[in-house]
Length: 449
Ligand code: PFF
Image 1 (tube, rainbow, N blue to C red):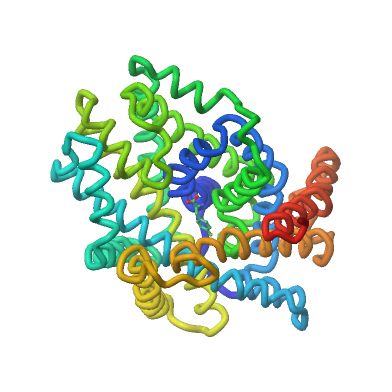
Image 2: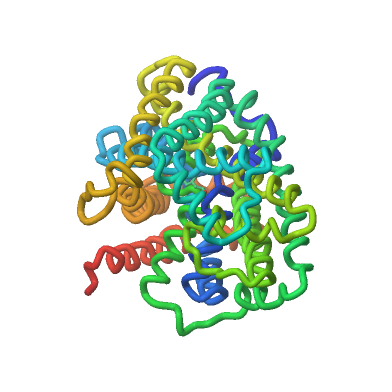
């Protein structure tokens, strides 16, 4: 064991940091439009099912791996199975975290710019075309994309450099309540508008006819992405959890908070969009094009618009902190490097990769690999490959490879009362979740015809 290892000081700190990682652009930017495109409530039901039956067991397994070994993902695999090939999956996770923060950082950079635009009252544009034009011009502008990516990364790096307790935990405890409060205010405003019921209906009334196999795959992808599992994040966060914290309860609370915030985001967005008769199907542009337009029609729109982009910024920040922590902890622990130096060096690499992603929306738009732009390729590698592969491996590792006495002890299950819970969890970890991941993954990459 490493002496004096930094870690979370309290259960509340764990929840804030891990829910901070989970709640991000995935909940507020992606979830509403993906749900919108895939039949609203029908998609949400499947997503909920996957979250609790598949992604939550992965989260719990990742916590078990991290806390029992006290290591980052690669170190955790190595310490249980020094000669096994497991560690390569850990390394793939590290690479995926690097790709993820690079493209995530670009969207977070746009968000940061929109905070600035909202603050300086530059989001009062009038027509739908003007909003469309604004967003497209921001995306098409390489300098501004890279500039705002760098600003966003600077916030991330500063917090990560301060350490786990004094950086990640401290800021998560400050920012998560702010995020929740802002979201509640926005959702309340949205559902109390005249004509909001159509939006609520859209979100909560299932249309199963829109539920294709592809929609099922994206629901699983969304569940993994949203809970931040499969690329080592929750292993390293698990390693910072104190022994007296109950992992089952904590993991369930994080999953609940995550889905609750995704649904609340939908409620903050769709009722307002419908109430003002704006098209709900803007896809990725929903929050950058449609929403600012909606806010300008609202009384006190300046306040709501600024609140929304601050909310989105905070959500992105607490998530990107966890991605950077995956990378930093790996180099600090495996190569004995200094936290500050590693964080700064990695952020330079992220700026380069992120710039390539940003440029793939403009100057490099014609560069395609496997038919995808670089931005979409990074997304594909992380969401469709690394996360399912990593999640499957973690499940198999904890369910079948690790010493089951250690797993049992980590789950806090010496006591008889919990035996049933333990059996149920292990049934999910060993059988249900890995088979679901496997089938859907093979189907997704086209191997099941
Ligand atoms: N869960 C984050 C979101 O929903 O935006 C994204 C994420 C963070 C994915 C950290 C993976 C990760 F390791």
